[in-house]
Image 1 (cartoon, one colour):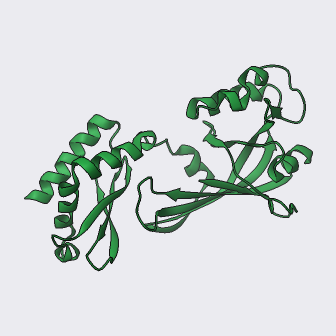
Image 2: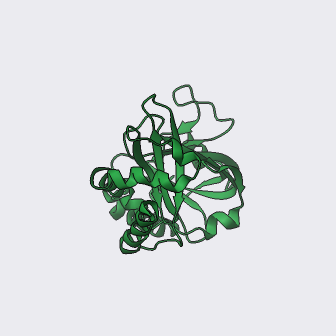
Length: 250
């Protein structure tokens, strides 16, 4: 879930906030955004001179499972906002379409034609914007840290991101006892886990699994179980999960 804020832009309806319909990152580390053409961000970018518009995108990471307190972390990316125009439009449209099934919204056919004006595409008037990253920050289970632009550009998409929700659901429904048994790996903290405790997998990426343990008094805590090495696909994930379950059962 993301929102885009343009400091100093007055908009009584949106208060300067725009919610991107979709977003992706270019190989060079810029963020491509598809926003409503009448949003404050779109209007500010369309009427500014080149990179005059500074903007902040806030990303809220929400667990794709039904648990209390679903927010897993937040991130902020700040930089300079410009419309995607002319020969850049077709490439940007294809990058967005690769990550999201939004061809109809983008108006891919129109996007490949000569620029019709200030960046509006399709019947519903969407605008593609480019955010050149100047700085970033994350705040999650591991604490708050700054992110440099070159670090942001170098990070590869997580191979499990597109399937995280279904993988977590499978772990919860088909392996709930094994997931709860992972508390045996927590040392002194894990000794508090009892038979009545509930364990819900709330996060999964190439580096490991995040589980929320809740006791009978509804007290809860999150624990992270790292894989021996990052996984590259579901096959490697299956092996990594078996290793975790076997270690907990010893």
